[in-house]
Image (cartoon, rainbow, N blue to C red; front, side, top):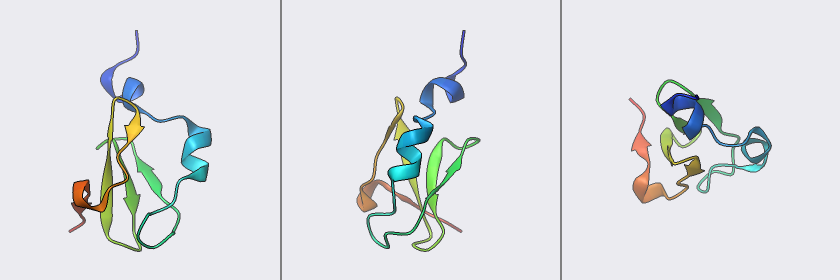
Length: 63
Protein backbone atom coordinates (compact mmCIF):
# COMPACT_ATOMS: atom_id res chain seq x y z
CA UNK A 1 0.00 0.00 0.00
CA UNK A 2 1.46 3.44 -0.92
CA UNK A 3 2.43 5.80 1.87
CA UNK A 4 1.13 9.37 2.28
CA UNK A 5 3.96 10.95 0.23
CA UNK A 6 3.39 8.56 -2.67
CA UNK A 7 -0.38 9.17 -2.70
CA UNK A 8 0.17 12.93 -2.61
CA UNK A 9 2.64 12.91 -5.52
CA UNK A 10 1.16 14.52 -8.65
CA UNK A 11 1.34 12.85 -12.05
CA UNK A 12 4.83 13.38 -13.56
CA UNK A 13 3.30 14.46 -16.89
CA UNK A 14 1.32 17.14 -15.08
CA UNK A 15 4.51 18.39 -13.45
CA UNK A 16 6.10 18.87 -16.88
CA UNK A 17 3.27 21.22 -17.85
CA UNK A 18 2.93 23.29 -14.70
CA UNK A 19 4.78 26.59 -14.27
CA UNK A 20 4.77 29.21 -11.56
CA UNK A 21 1.66 31.40 -11.99
CA UNK A 22 3.65 34.52 -11.10
CA UNK A 23 6.90 34.09 -13.04
CA UNK A 24 6.02 31.36 -15.56
CA UNK A 25 9.26 29.65 -14.48
CA UNK A 26 9.66 25.89 -14.20
CA UNK A 27 8.74 24.25 -10.89
CA UNK A 28 10.62 21.53 -9.04
CA UNK A 29 8.96 18.88 -6.89
CA UNK A 30 10.01 18.63 -3.25
CA UNK A 31 8.93 15.11 -2.26
CA UNK A 32 9.95 15.55 1.37
CA UNK A 33 7.61 18.50 1.90
CA UNK A 34 5.06 17.53 -0.76
CA UNK A 35 5.12 20.82 -2.61
CA UNK A 36 6.11 22.45 -5.88
CA UNK A 37 8.92 24.98 -5.60
CA UNK A 38 9.35 28.11 -7.69
CA UNK A 39 12.89 29.32 -7.12
CA UNK A 40 12.22 32.38 -9.31
CA UNK A 41 9.31 33.54 -7.13
CA UNK A 42 10.81 32.09 -3.93
CA UNK A 43 7.51 30.32 -3.20
CA UNK A 44 6.46 26.74 -2.51
CA UNK A 45 3.00 25.67 -3.65
CA UNK A 46 1.30 22.93 -1.61
CA UNK A 47 -0.01 19.67 -3.04
CA UNK A 48 -3.19 18.39 -1.41
CA UNK A 49 -4.58 14.95 -2.26
CA UNK A 50 -2.36 14.88 -5.34
CA UNK A 51 -3.64 18.25 -6.60
CA UNK A 52 -1.20 21.18 -6.85
CA UNK A 53 -2.68 24.32 -5.31
CA UNK A 54 -1.28 26.97 -7.65
CA UNK A 55 -2.60 30.04 -5.82
CA UNK A 56 0.04 32.53 -4.67
CA UNK A 57 -2.09 33.22 -1.58
CA UNK A 58 -1.71 29.51 -0.61
CA UNK A 59 2.04 29.38 -1.27
CA UNK A 60 4.69 29.28 1.43
CA UNK A 61 7.53 31.80 1.15
CA UNK A 62 10.95 30.18 0.87
CA UNK A 63 13.57 31.11 3.45
